[in-house]
Length: 210
Image 1: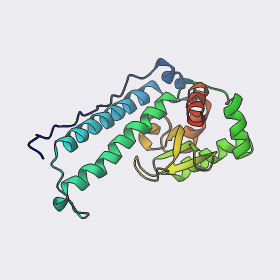
Image 2 (image 1 turned 90 degrees about the vertical axis):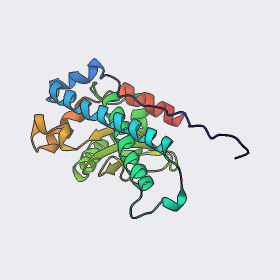
Image 3 (image 1 turned 30 degrees about the vertical axis):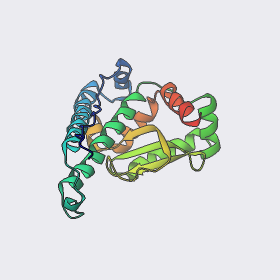
Image 4 (image 1 turned 180 degrees about the vertical axis):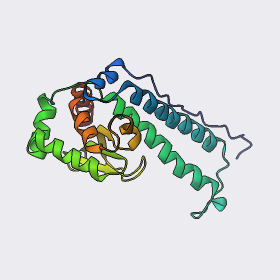
């Protein structure tokens, strides 16, 4: 150590920022304010746990001899971190792209038409993906292939695709729709597709493809 004392790395914290008022315009298709308010508390929980685990990791003595794949403190923290931070990022995306209407336009629409054949085909593909998944469905830009694709996720931290930037996040956990639609996930997805903020999605697409 050359006589120097190791210093603690600075811990960067995340925050679940308040929902934009546009999010609550989804009431027109049946996704209620009450649902969003309860859902936001879960978003805050993911942020809080992300920060808690980051602090714990920063304070932990990293001793490889104590790490174990069956159980060890480092395994538990690293595994749960991927779930907490994944949940934070997924909900950050979900709420950012809610509160609009209509269909995409411009370069994003052109790309969806090219990669899916039509906007309607994309909607059917995303709906099918959402019906097949246990937690999430995403539209993402695949930097490796240079195209758009829909991906499925069973949990906050399952099946992330390397080299992909998510553009649309569809939450299909029951907490996202049960209050308004009961077990009718299909109707929830139909409602979601009517209230996507395509300006927000286009900004993400432009950044991803720049």
